[in-house]
Amino acid sequence: MNWFIVFKNNFKRGLHKKTSFFVKLLLPTVVVMLGIAANYADNPAANIGIVYSGENVSAEAFMQALNDTPGIEARLANPDMISTDVILGKYTAVVKFAEDSFTLYSVKDENTHSNLEQLTESYIKDQTPVKADFLQAHNLSTAQRTTAFILLFLMITATITAALMIKDKNNGTFIRFLHSPQNAVTYVLGNITYNFAITYFQFFVSVSALELAGINVGIDYLNLLVMGIWIVALATAFGTCMASLFNNEMYSNLFSTCIVLILSLIGGTFIPFPKMPAGLQYISVISPWRWFISIVTSMEQGSDWFSNLPLVLILTLFIVAFSLVAFVKNKNFRSL
Amino acid sequence: MEHLGTLFQLALKRRSKDFFVLFYNMIFPIIVIVLLGYLTSKSYSKDFTSYHYYTVVMIPFCSLMGVTTVSYAAQEEKTFKTVYRYMAAPISKGELVVAKFLSCVIVFALCSIVTLGISKLLFNMEFNGRFLWIVLLLICESAAVTGIGLFLGLACKSLDTLRNFLNLPIVIFGFLGGVFFPVNFFQPVLSGMIKLSPLTWVNRGIVSCLFDNNVHILWIVSAVFLLTGCIAAGLTVKFFKKEVLIS
Image 1 (cartoon, chains in turn brown, green):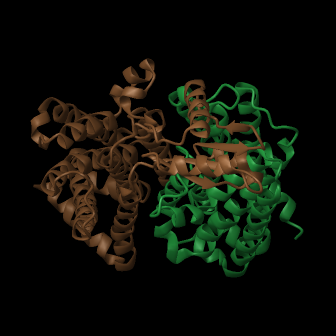
Image 2: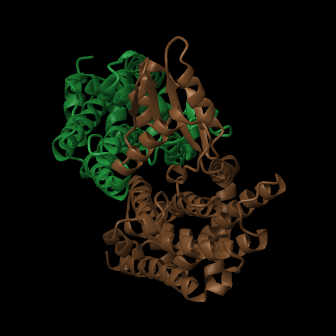
């Protein structure tokens, strides 16, 4: 139970500077809540911008027909910013009407572009609404996005919390601890449990506040809390691993942000796993995001967290691997 | 200001030899551009590819992430254990801050410009003769990033905790500014937040300059960045106390 001394003392040390401690505790909570709220918004509908001058009957009829089409919204676009609005995603495409012709602006792939042209041509002739499924973005669901973002933010904040270990090494506390006599495993275990308690508190407060506010992320609250144990354990183990690898707080924080962003990219946070190129689908096995998203997909269909035991086991292996690196790295510190 | 030259040279040497700064501002953005560009390559046209999109949005984002690096670099005397020498030396705090400010702006801006150049060559990006406008914006952004970073690192001792969390709002600004994927401006929940992200305006400034021949937004954003950088650097000189480096 020697690890408990480290765990307890870390709290005492934190509470010594109360303001700083509560900022560290609550700031990530607010950020996670903001992240969840930002992802709560539904998948965007396709927006088509329309540009025409004076009275143009076919343009007006076209705009009305688009607005009557499920999943499409049409708006008047700024003629001076057509390329900007199309490139930055304000509009999926912009249709510019001249007297008896039109020009379609989009940066979409050839297939979507030609489908858009056909849709425009057909709506100019006949305004009866048709299905435009090709414009629907097949993005991640709210639950998948939310889980991915919580993991991303908590991995960064857990690294910041773990930076206490770097301070201990730099000011000699760690060496004194080893001579007390204690071992590095006890020290790492105490720090992991302290970090876990702080990070799970942040997770719990964030999801509970959103639950109370009536924001349903698409996963049952109890399942979310159980899943939180793995999310937080992974974030904590990763943070501790980063803090053990670097002797400088800045390097640890910034490298962890780089690694987290890259892992989340290849894990399917931004592009759904099935839509990834084949090569990246293989590489994505090294990203915990892929496995979390797979479990959430299954949970959305009614199963609970433990119905996906093989995937849970893979995530547990990630946690063990990160923790082992932290243990080994700190154990070797004695020989320096 | 007689010691400014020496301090500036020393700071410039340190910054330009810092492998981490070079990695974070040059190698990391290229990795992410290639990765995201490859991931989304099927969704874009042949004329304007996904690599072009991520070149435009990722370089300013990584430059903004430099705030954290600068806030730590501001206190590098602590790391190098040379604080007492700086305390005893007859150098003013103005000289110290200005030397750090100029060296960081130069190195950060150079990193962004080199990354932009590499991306231009790698992805055949067409700048329509406006490469220098983008360079101007990146220099102004580096000034703002450096000014804010120095202010947080040197003048706000009470906000020391906060600087560890700087990456979180920057990543959120990135999401809202369309750095990771184009965002829908008309989402009722997000539209207000999107407008608050500086990266939204940076990206609009760059894209409208390159593809709509409209430099209006880019001018305003550059001016705001430059002003922010100068004000933040001025405030740092005013509020910075050398003793802060000891604790």
